[in-house]
Length: 335
Ligand code: DAH
Image (cartoon, rainbow, N blue to C red):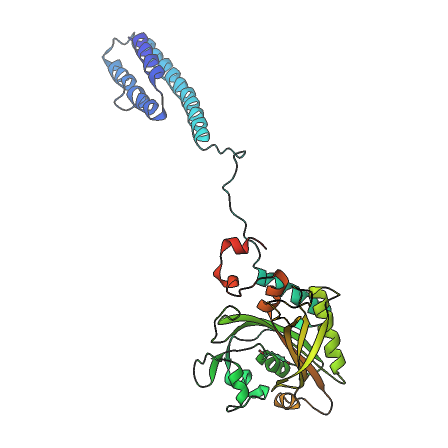
């Protein structure tokens, strides 16, 4: 009888392929209503002389079954772990998913270059808001409400007193109010004008520059700007200053560099003049210094402003400003 149980147990054990089935076998043999328990319950009905022997046999087989079950359990657990590890296997030698690299936008590239040049000349970098007060954009820069110079810039007004800045010059005012002289910074940023054609976009970038100290001269201004143009476009590029007008500088100048496309011989881009205008500049108007509470007896200085798109167009020979903002990947990939 006991031998038979043993035999059936081993048959069952061999057919158990997973832990669930193994557990069922455990219940079948060792459970409360299991085969061995049933045998134990029969003991009292046996003649007393046989009871010790049968009891011993049943006990032995119980120990055996427990041992076999636990070794099979260990085996199945190990097999299941192996199976799981295999199913979660990652081949790290497979090539990864291709993520296309972006490239730096040509405007950011040129902007970084401009900033770097001025930092090397001792300028720091200042920022100001794009949504600006009429006061900083115009009034404080010596452009009163009815001044005809306001016509030079097609302003996006948000309300009577609030607008999108039309140039980076308001940062001059904000920067000076924050400091006491000497002052030397540039202010790069976005500006807005209601204008759109092949050389104008409603949003574009400028870099403003300002230097205030004792005894600043127009020669200092020339030195800084010529150095900038030479570092940006090459040492042999000719530079000239033409008298001009800006309400916030006196005297004022526009700065031209020799056309790099035709080497000053005259072409479509320089309108056959051989020259390209790239900067506005001048000595800061005393009224502007007074507006920020600087002592005009002691301090003076220069300011300049340039368009980043224009410089990038010249540097990379791009003939339509709108290309910068269309995000055509074929255009952007070239930089
Ligand atoms: N703000 C002028 C513009 O947008 C550029 C400019 C000219 C800035 C002369 C200056 C300057 O600081 O001195 O057209």
